[in-house]
Every structure is written in C-alpha cells, then in structure tokens.
Image 1: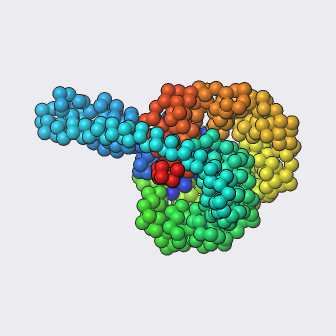
Image 2: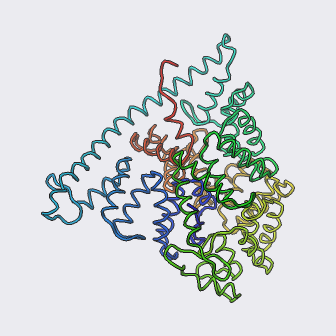
Image 3: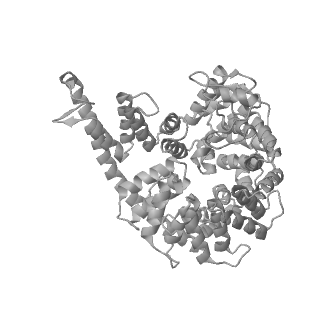
Length: 607
C-alpha cells in the first residue's frame, strides 16, 4: 500500500502521516476520522473509508467498529449490513465495548432469537445461530474482564517486588556482575513500573549497565535519546548508543541506526551506511527494516529504482506477517497496472480517470488555476499534486521542482514547502542548510510555520550555527500569530531555562495557550504537569482530563498514561477493564511501555 498524504485542508499534525506510513494503525484511524468529520473536503467519506479500512486490517478494534458503521450506513462505501456485522463482531471479539452495543441496537434481539434488520418469519432459521454468536461474545467479554483483573493485579505486584529485589542486589557486595540488575532498574524507571517514572534515573542505570557490556541497555539509551522521552532530542547520543547495540547484533538498534544515517541525524547523511544497517536488521527478520528497504528501492531516491527488489522485500515482510507490507504491495501492483500518461504526468484511478484530470491538462498548458480549498497558485498546485499523489502519480522529486518554480516567483508558502522537502529529504538530498535558506525566505514574509521551523534549526544547530537567542526570537514571532508548535517550543525554553531565565509560571501559561489552540504536545505536557505531585499545579483530575483528551486523538503515550490512572484510580474511579484495553490500544500503536508490560513473565520465584 502506498499511503497518499492527507488533504491539507484537514490541518493535521505534520508527523501524523509519517506514523501512518510506518504502519501506525491509530495514526491511520485519526486521518480517517479527520476526513469523516470534514464534509467540505472533496470525497471525504471515500477517503475516510480508505484510511479506516487500513487501520481495521491491522486489528485496530476501534477502526473495526467505525468500519462497521460505514458499511451499516453506506458512508463512503455501498451499504452492506452483512459486512457491517462482520466488522462489528471482529471489534467486539477484541473487547471494544461500543461494538456490542451497536450489535444490540442494529440487530434486533427478541425472545431468544437474534436476526438482522426487520424480523421476518423466514429468517427464524438463522436466528438461533446468531443469538449463540451474541452469547459467545458476552461470555468471552466476561471471561476477559476476570482475566485482566487478575493479570493487572499480579503484574503491578510483580514489578513492585522486582524493584525491591534489584535494590537489594545492588547493595549485595558478594554479587560482582550487576549489569543486568542495572539494566532492569533502568527499565523500571523508564516505564514507571513498580516506581514513579523518572527518565533521568533510567538513563543513569542504563548507562551503568551499557558501560559494563549490556546490549539491551545500550539500545534503550539510544531509544530514549532518539524518542526524547520527557527530554530534548539528542541525536548524537542516540547515534552513539545505537551503534554500540547494533554492533552487538541488536536488530532494533540496527534499524534505528539506519534511520539516523538515512536522515543525517546525529551523524553525516550516508545512504550506503543506511542500506548496510537496514540489510543487517532485515537479515534478523526485522519487519520495519524490510519495509524500509522495499520503500527505498521503490522510490529510487538514494539507489537505482528496482521493482524486483521492491517486490522481494515486501514479500519477505509479508511472510513475517506484516499487513502493512501486504497492502503496500497491493498498491504497488495497482500503480504499475493502471497508470497512464496524459500530457506528461501519470494520472490514475481505480474508477477511471480522476476528477481533476481536466485541471491537470490545464495546468500543464500553463493556465491560471487556483485550488478551491487551499487557494494554491498554479505552480504550487502542480507541486502539491505531485507531493500528495493527488490524481498524479506521487513523485517527490517533481514536486520539489515545481515548488522551486513557484518559490522563485515569490510564493511564500511554496518557499516553506521547499524548505520542508529539503529538511526531510523528500525528492531531494536531505540538506538542512538548503532548508534553512528557504525557511528564511518564507519567515521573512511572516510565515509562522517557517519561523517556527527555522527556530528549531537554530536551536539544534542544524544547517545553521546554533543560536538559542535567535531561536527564541523566531519562536516569539511565530507565537504572536498563535502558531501552536511555536508556542509549545517557547514554553519549553522557559521551562528549561534554555537561553532565558527559567520561568515555570510563564512556561505553564504558554503551554496552556498552545493546548487551547490544539497542540497535542502541549496538552500532553499539561497532563504531565498536573500529574506531578511535586509542583503547585498538582491536580490528578485535570491531569486525567488532559490525558483523555489526547488519548482520544490516538496518542499512544496518552493512552498508556491514562491506563495507569485507571489502574491506580488516580483522577478517576478505578476501572481495570478500561486500563486493560487502553494498554492494548497503546501496545497496538507500537508504544513500548505498553507492549512490554505484558511481555515480562510474572514469576515470583525471582523475587
């Protein structure tokens, strides 16, 4: 499946599409829901169906439920109650509560009989079997509730005992080799198991373990620095520790190291090194590495395009059970089989020529067209269509060419987009210096997105000399225009005292403004602040509300933290059932904290 960027009118977070491309089912679901909620966007229900279907195919229970709704009411797809029932059933079997309610409401339950739609005497033959299905679901749900109550209680007790045991072993002078104990303590502090989550303590213990040769600890250090758990990005440290773990055979670290080499994060950009480490990880059956290799050979940006190798790597990932690779391969075949050339660009559609074909023709002839949704200039319209794969075969390189043409005419938004493409290496060689050039042009025309991104480059010293004060000035300029990411970054500078006098009250105020303007990062930060019993704003109920707000938008960390609050009864009534399903959803999203909570066996003999 080749994911097409969502319509710009949706105003989604920039990294949401990247997560969706990586196979994040919750990100795919969020894009689908955004389309569903925006009737002014062209073909919104059709696109909603497409994205929600992709998420549902990855066993996302909420997506399966919403897909059932689309089929039940004929939204974005032909109405089909039978298929709707099947998706509701799949969702219910995973314990999604609303699915059971929807089955009850849409399919009449009467006097021990269970049939779809209007009751008919001729349907009585199927009624009993359908009723049995419903009872099976109820029995399964009740059984799962009992299981999760036992599982969560045992897990929580196990981690508490494990934490105590590890500290006893550290104090034991007879035990010389303590690297595994240090690594375990790092894990507990990193994820908040058996103790309050403290990232700095996790780093401290992981470092002790890694220096004594523990490969898992080295990887976890790299992962923390890469994913910036409650801290700034530090790609150099991530690169250092990923390298240590990768050289010792850790396939996840090898995949992470390849990503850093490919994007020039913490090291010089090196496509050859990226390919080497992706191959090493793939040899160890790392699915994401296989998909990355398939994508690299499919796009042909850093190597010669090779359909044979694309097919080879997608096929290998499919054999490992990857639904993402299966859908990507289907999209790959579709693009190859139905593409046709019209006035240069390749225009495609599963249902014949697309609705914008006439626009493509006119644009190619140079006529003056303005997009009804975004008000794009003609050149920027072509660039956007190539970037998004909107009726034209997606081609980042051609998109960059058209953005450059538009940028040279003084188009401020095109200059920002061109900077974005250079920074992320889309269709061009990744070049933070060139990105900063185009961001500067746009920022000088008061483009708040460009001002914010330029501030980030200044703060990190990417492509430009590191200058924290200039970064703060740029954040301020963008913040005056109520740019949520800029307000969030400005709040961080005051929180950390980075280039300014530390002022937590001002930081808190700025986080609040950014949160109200829709910044998920700010909302998540406020949830953390209100949940910290060491500051004056401690309020578990407000913390719970913010986590719930962000979790509803599919954020895996928020789902995990919300599960913890339900588990402990903080800010809400204790609800082990909700805790369990939030842990599962966070785990399906790929959040390691949630994934690992069930992966460690409960074995009291070790304690």
